[in-house]
Image (cartoon, rainbow, N blue to C red):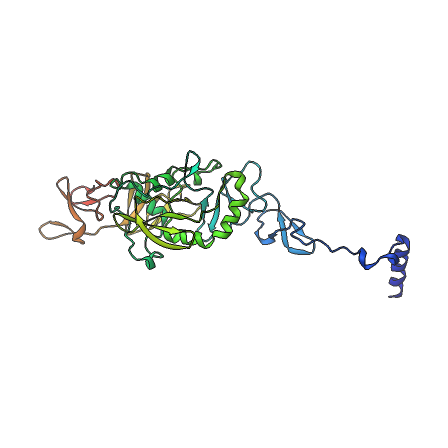
Length: 358
């Protein structure tokens, strides 16, 4: 201890300033955030610089981070911190609002001539084939919950006339998109359940949208947004973003729409055992008990529950469910409800008595 004291004293003597230091000369060290260490170190998936006095804080070097609510989704299908932005050569295409289900929302509302507009759900009315009628607001967490499937059903319909909201989603491609996941045909009109998740993340999402304004992003409006959920032949559901409640209105009512995209890599087709190579929304092989059909509007393959058939002693062909039995081109067939031998254009396949599949 004596030797250490002598060394310290000698050091102070050499620099000649220790004895002259006063309390007024002390400077408070800047905190981590001031120095740019603004993110949780665990969110940096690549190289990072760590705050010297708090290693839990870091500045991610320009690179992808673990996707979280508020992350910027790049056109390369990777997530980036909203504080650091995307690296050179990568443009933002969306903001993550549901990390569990890997969903991101578009940077802008649906636009015409670069102006965000309100527009009808559809041109005319009909009960859309393949789309559930969700008549109970309390049941919207279990009815019509898949915006991708809803949008495909709307696109396959012809009786609604022009389906402005679904068509806009299907045709949307952000300028920064450089990978297949965000190209035309990949975006969809969200369900009420998905819009509710977006509403709950609104403040975080809006903060990230503000940080990407230079890329054309605009914050979510305190207004109403269409969902892909149908109430009846004449009405569809929307969410009021100024209050967070769900309601329905005639399909001719004009509201905004903000499209959504799935940025994951897992197969998302219901009842599908294996998606087609490199595709998450078209099934190559359905699970046992389900048959494959092609949505003619999107050219995507999906799976529907197989329709059981029986042949009695007189070789009479009947459907186990009499409500789906019909006659197509002179053949007795079992068709998905309301499909009318494929005349709706949905691409559903019917099981028929002498052709196997119609």
